Image (cartoon, rainbow over all chains, first blue to last red; front, side):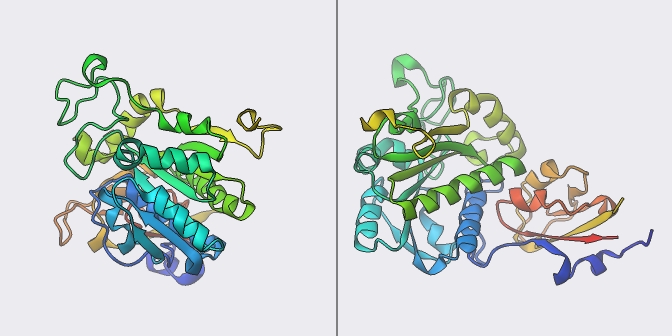
Length: 266
Length: 74
């Protein structure tokens, strides 16, 4: 066996995986191990593979990903807190040939923006919603979010979330699946190479549904927040698998293309 | 049986040392270096380069897209 030098392997002919050109060279401000980086990357890969870089509009939320426009080389608009679906509605109706997606966290989508997302889904706008659920408000310092698990300690629930004081965690993805305007509702995660590939497929399907004009595509991505949870990135992934998947199990919740007849459209 | 050799190229200065690639590597090629980069992070590097099979799992899970993967058949 001939021993190959590493410098001989590293050349353009042997390339199997590299950063796409849609991701800019800016250093992401996210904490080490944050799921946002992976999700940004797979969105960029989908945009690159579909060759829609010049006709994609992203709507960024308030939260850690408010600066997403620094990292993906597409058109962006930044919305007021929770109002990304309303802005996406306008963008899609004015420019129906463009691909419009919103990128929202759980504090943005499931708390202050509940009304906007519910009505955008109920109207069946032809947009894609990427919902990052890490069960905490990451940017503002780890406060309790509507999606925080029962018993989970955050800076505003130091004794752990309790039903008496804070109510139950909000499973907003299941709520949205009941609406007739929602065409594709799924829950994914990005903690292992296999799940990253599955999430990428789901995002691609979400973008392709915009061509078919069948309604909103809602992709929840169960994520980690190592800084907010105050554990290491690797431990965060394990904690997510053990605790978050019980309440938020990954998988397709609704796919109106597959179903013979959508029970909610009667 | 055709054998494959792989190699990764890490953008050391942009690596944040989260260690997700170390967990994702099936052949335990990657480890965090004892040295640090300009920002003080222990960056990822190939600890056992001869074991790399170029599967690109590390590239898929890297949040900062700093890993480029190469593969060659020998």
